[in-house]
Image 1 (cartoon, rainbow, N blue to C red):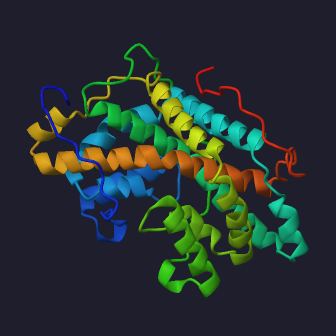
Image 2 (spheres, one colour):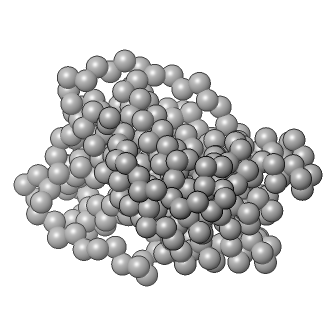
Length: 313
């Protein structure tokens, strides 16, 4: 139930293809919002989540009008940091990750190439928690106003700076990279390869070594448990964000968005809210590996049962 409007939200079907509105094809208003998103979050490109919202311009407009002042706050930055640190701690403490950087040096990876790869990894390490937090916030927001009006709104100015990565599309990938892409799509049950992996594909040797490590990790029961717990942590953190944030289903319908479109966007938001935790875990694998790896279990020691780790401790 969303406000006073009852919407039957059907599960997102596995065969459904997510439609995106690229900046090059967007209307002037959608391009304006994309520019504002990039400037506010200080990122070189617009995440897939926002491009999915771009397919319904009224929703994107209402969402970002409400979200922009919140995304500029110190509290939003702190909650994103806590979500990021929570995920990093889980991956570092409980999974065996080799030293990717040393492996790249042994293969005569140039300093420039290494810097470009590090730029891509850090970009997604910064951006994915913010996108997940906004997706979780909006998912709750379909029911009605969310956020705490009592939370102060001190502004935060990001200090990070990134170059826009070069993405290797599927049709341009080498046979080895294409094979990795297909394995990733099967593993993550998606029709498309996330931009993060397509940026890693600029460096095929790294992508292959990274995937050799990651595909073992994702089979672990701990990984599935962490996916769920990271999602819960993100939801919990939204209760600490400033408010009110009011982009409810009722308001969208009143603004002229059709019931079918509202229902579709609720489902799409849930898809992102459920899938981004794994993306965050996976970028942490890349970051830890490029920074020297986690050697604690490198000798094949059994992994202990983890203690509860939450972003609200």
